Length: 104
Image 1: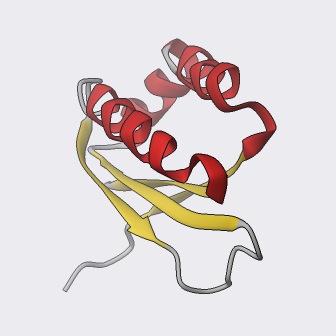
Image 2: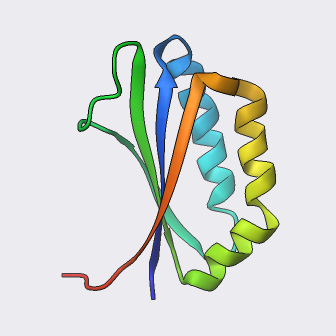
């Protein structure tokens, strides 16, 4: 069953360009992990991020839940820590996991 792993980001507008450059490399590294099939970076329109913030969503498509479990166990702590170390409180992230029920 295909899994969608989404990371919603609120990015301080002052660092949005630097974060976008970093995020590009970060997503490319994620796609190197077993079971990560594709990713897209989306500019979020609703709800708005608020004054002084940029809202983005990174959506990863994974082969199955085992691939997500392996990522969360083996790679997520380091990958998340890299972003926090670089951007601190200037980036806020929330995550959700979805299973594809049907595709048309």
